[in-house]
Image (cartoon, rainbow, N blue to C red):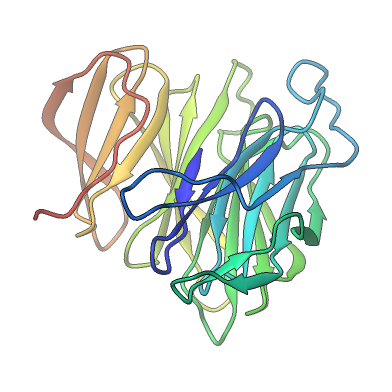
Length: 274
């Protein structure tokens, strides 16, 4: 899953699931990608799931504010890491990584078998940010505290996404914060629901609110519109996108009745009008 570096949009980061490699590409003036300026591979002991954790599997990558480092979630290693860049100035005056100088700044091991897939990062509160890590394999959310330098302070909380006693197959898929910062949403493939949590503004901890059926099968992804009024759930195996209205007071979801038929939807992004 690639992410454009937010500051100046000059570089592209990519997390390669199959190989665990993390290339870093400059974006040229004409929009093409140049040769990668950094390339690193996740390393470490793999998790206990022999089918899914037989090797490193970098599943998510995103830059920090200021682009001094990047966060990486590796499903195969049960780890969340920060990679630090030694930088030099490119011809346009922007900082870029020196070739071959990427290194792990910090690595936090999660509970064995968690299988970190994606994460969501809160807005800074008193120079502190919270990282909400979705565990695909055990259907949980792990809350991590970070410093302004991005160093992890250890797990604060681990909370399940499924009801107690659930025994069916489930693969957690997507995670996103509401623009207000008050609520966290995650999707369950198997139970086929969106799980909703409220967020303690001081501690960053989660409280379960409710689970809402997505009206289809395998909600691999969902997206919240920038206004925070609507959530669009993509049901991959039902070929539908279902639109929900968000209650801004409770975080709850109510179907609007709008259903868009799209073959195997797996990702959705809102783009500002030109």
